[in-house]
Length: 194
Image 1 (tube, rainbow, N blue to C red):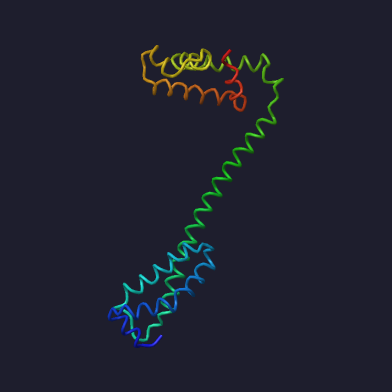
Image 2 (image 1 turned 90 degrees about the vertical axis):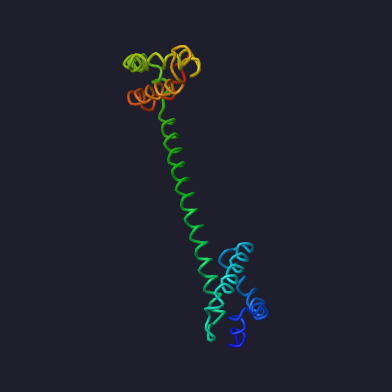
């Protein structure tokens, strides 16, 4: 790139800018796209590099290597984009791994569940004992919800408390029962409503 073209660019000559654009655009696009594999995104980055050149034209030196300037801007923007993608994929991977661990645990729990053991008088007695150990208000609300099948709104209206209050007592009951009954709780709760 001749120093005359750079001088003209420094002075805001659009013809000089157009000459630089036309001689470098396709090479920069191929360079960016070889890393991004997304021509639309690569084109955005290259366009941004030329905008950056135009905005900084006044601070250029006559010996500035314009091609190196543009490649540096494209490289930096491409790298930033790839690092964001990398972080995004790592977050997705962590979420997938967490869900996979949850599924593994569910599979293990179901595989080790023995229906013959589940409905023994001993376990039913443990469930009854655990329900009876609940605080009175919590026990009443839990029984109304799970055994009688009433909605939270119906319970709230009948006991003259808020729906949030009902939800609080049900959550409290499940927390206590989970501690007492462990992996058996989900299926026992399912069979509570008779």
